Every structure is written in C-alpha cells, then in structure tokens.
Image 1 (tube, helix red, strand yellow):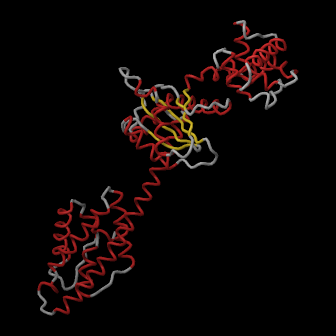
Image 2: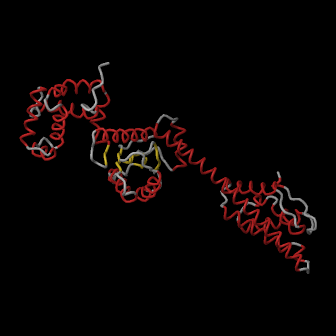
Image 3: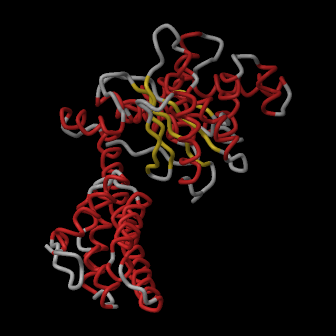
Length: 404
C-alpha cells in the first residue's frame, strides 16, 4: 500500500527512511498517535517544498483513507490534525532549502508549497475522518435498532441477546420495567423528546441498565427495578416520565403506560407487552389519565384474553339494553359512571350532569331489561364485567363480532 512506503526524496539529506522516519516518530510520540497515520504525507510534503510539486489525486485519496483509519482506530479528528501539523513543522525545520538556503525567495516559495499541501492534506484527512464517523454512527444506530427490536419482541436467542446487551449497559439478569410514552395527537414527532428524555432518565435512574429509544411512533424507556430496600425508586416510573415530558415538551399531551418488572431477556418483552396493552386499553376505554399502570389494568387483560367469552357476556347480559327507548349507550354510560364512582348514585349523577333521580331510574330500567341489578352482589359483578367488556369491544358504537 502507498501508506506504507517511505520513498527517497530527491535533494533531501539521505534517504526518506533516514530523514523522514525520525520526524514522523517524533511527531507521533508528541501527539500520542499511531505513526502509521502519517502514511506518505511527509515525503509528499518534502517533495512540494523542494520541487514545488503539488500532490496528485491518488496521494490525497490515500490521506483521506488515513483519516478513515484514524476514526476506525478511535483517534479523534483533532488528534489526527495535530499529528499532521506537528509533523509539518518538524519537517520544515530540517528541510535543506530552509536550513541551508540564503535566498529568501526560495524559502518563501517552499513555505507556500508546504502550506498548500498541508491545507489540502488536512482537508481530506478531516473529510475521511468525518465520513468514517458517519458510517460508524449509522452502523451503531442500525445495531441499536436491531437490538431494541429483538429485545422488545423477546424471540431472539437468549444467550446471544445477553451478549448483545452488554455493550448497551443492560444486565438482562436483573428485572426491568418498560414504559411507553405516546403522544395524544396524530403524527406527532417523538425523536427530539426521546433525546431529551434520555438525559432526564439517566439523571434520575443512572446510566446503567437504562435504555431510551423510539419504536412505532412511541418513546420506549427501559429501567431496572429499584432495590428491594427502596422499591419506590421505580414504582412511580410512569409518573416520573410524564413529569419529565411535561417539562421538556409541555406543549403537547402525552400518555405514559408502565409495565411491571420481570427478570431475564424475556422479562423486558413481557413488560413491554403489558405497557403496550395498557396504552391500548386506555385508548379504547377513553381514560382521561395521563399515566396508566399495567397492574391496575390486569382485569382488562383477563377479559381480553377470551374474546368469544366476553362477546357472549356482553351479548347475554347487556344485549337487552338495546330495547330501551333511549338506546343502550345511555344506560351503559350510566352503569359505567355508577361503577366508577364507587356505587354512589350522587357522584354518578354529578359526573353525568343529571339528577340523582335520573340515575336511579336508569339503574332500575337496567334491572328490568337485563334481569341483573346493581344492588345484588352476584349480579353486580356480572354487570360490571360486562360493562368493562363492552368498553373493550367498543360496543354499542361497534357491532359485536358474529358467533364463530
């Protein structure tokens, strides 16, 4: 390769190896950078100073490639440029045209040639370095996205997943919570919020075992379970994230759902699925809460697991409400308000903006049509379960699925 050649420079003191190698080694030692990153730069620089020769395209391409090598080896752009500058002034002091010539014009021409080559070389060196860094960043982002997708899906090889998690600081042996933050407005961008939220989450929970990313238009936050001595560290994860989003993105409304903590590689996927279902249930049921906890919505997961059974329950228990003159929706809304208010007719009336007498009349009408009364504990449970199922199925706004 051209980067390994040390050609003789005509007019120099001895061979290129005798003269230029110590210059390169001195510059590399002073800058704590690999000497190989200089390649053929010094012979090219000496040739310009002595003969006024401009570098050819392939020579500058070689320097550009050295810039890419520097980035790949973890050498910063500033360190690489310092290496080239240090090598340049060290070479200048030993150039025969400088050390021996008494002709100021010859020295001026040599200086101009050296500066032009230095300018060209540094430009392509930095360009190569930045190009390699962009490629590395894109590669890292692709690996990160792939890792996050596999982690949340939970269907990848466990041993391999544990190995891939290590560079991201995730210990899959620990239980982890997953929280999802979703905008309550369509097509809203979430990337900037995710970046700002990551800083806040790291400040709050530390930089180990913490992961913030975006997936399907939502912000995903993975944090380890709090210590047994202080479980409150993560028990309010949803509220902490919602508060942070309010500070960094207060102009938009967010809803945050938090899953329970589970251990292992599959634990992350399980917590993610709980948070995802919690968001889904909150949307279907029209909840006003900005923070929903999966453990508070477990009953809906139970109801939703057997759709055929819940359809039968809704049809058999609440179906007769469709024979009401006011329709099923009004009576269903009254039942929901009554249950949500702790079976207090006065509070239900306040929420519905009707009189208490209207509420009691509607509850009586429900009992007449369905044969289930809210005053009897066994029948009240069936009614409540059917009402929750109706909300999940969005009935009566949507017709019930037909029997299989």
